[in-house]
Image (cartoon, rainbow, N blue to C red; front, side):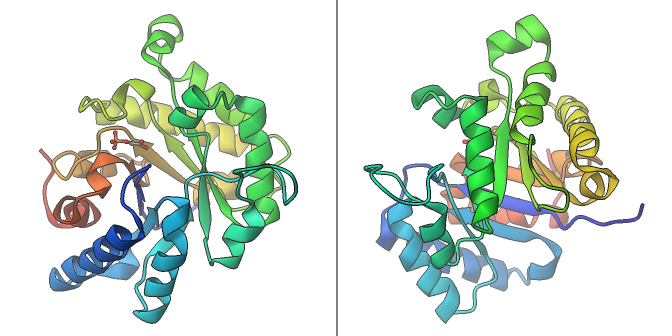
Length: 262
Ligand code: PEP
């Protein structure tokens, strides 16, 4: 097919860094990558700060022409109305937010987001021109009972229902047991699931989508292991939690092509 996928390194800050700290981190990250003569075209970088940071980060990115994508960590299924505390995709799009994490395991666990909610949020993102970064992954109990791929494959099948052909999406395979645990999946195991997820994309959205959609791995990604994941053919980047909060570490993850993973 020959379609190339630009790798994507995505930083999920979770509930960390206020808007002042956010501006400082983005500025320092940009300087760090520039100092290292990073080729910005070769790897896409997107940061996903808390909602209250978005306006400040967007202003900085615009003013300093920083080539980072801006993402949000969640959105409402609704456009507007009496939904206290919710944030609509419409508001995010107005802030030049380009993508939004959907179905992160922490949302699934602490906010009871099931596959139907994830599917509805995927639709809401697409409706407002945002790229949904759809997170799927098995818990350690799932892993024991069903193996690694059955649960994420089922989650993605539901999320992709009613997604129109040609819609841009990103998929993140994040085994729940690997998130924040320091225990990453092996590259081989992650590749195996990511390849199966790509087959789900093919079945639901066709060959072009399967060839062009970026499938990320997430779960205890660090500068020392990123290169080993990026060598796998169906892993097109990483969703990074803890490692995205430290400038030097995240900068080294983005520059994985320049160093050899441990
Ligand atoms: C995440 O929460 O998306 C994640 C991958 O976290 P960590 O990198 O800290 O494991």
